[in-house]
Image 1 (cartoon, rainbow, N blue to C red):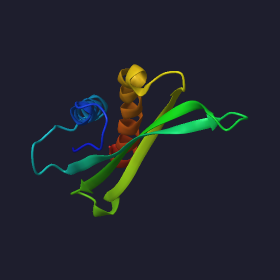
Image 2: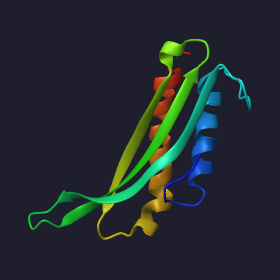
Image 3: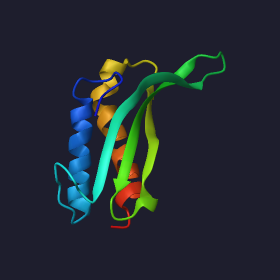
Amino acid sequence: MGTAGGPANMALQFNEKMKEYYQRNTSLALLPLNGDLQLEGAITGYEVTPAAPTANDQAALNRLTITIQVKFTNNKDEEKNFDQSFSFFKDFPQSQTLSQVESRLVPQILDQVVQDIFNKSAGDW
């Protein structure tokens, strides 16, 4: 998985979370090639935007959004294949910098994205 900004280890962190989640929630075995289910992806978005503007148009909160493009191939049932973006966000106070909250928010966002990808790809396994 590639990355579009964010912490240097974010792609590795995401890969590990995906592996752990699938191993914990299915009886599937992890293979380097030719598996029944194949996931490919890239982190395509990492952005901070203002959220929840105040009365004088200043943001009281900032929002960190991470987007991951995922291509899923089900070699047993082609109708379940998909290629789509998954994203999730967390808000943080404007008084804090991204570097102050990144190590706490990134894992929380990635956990939710992993769960969403799992539900779409292997929820019925």
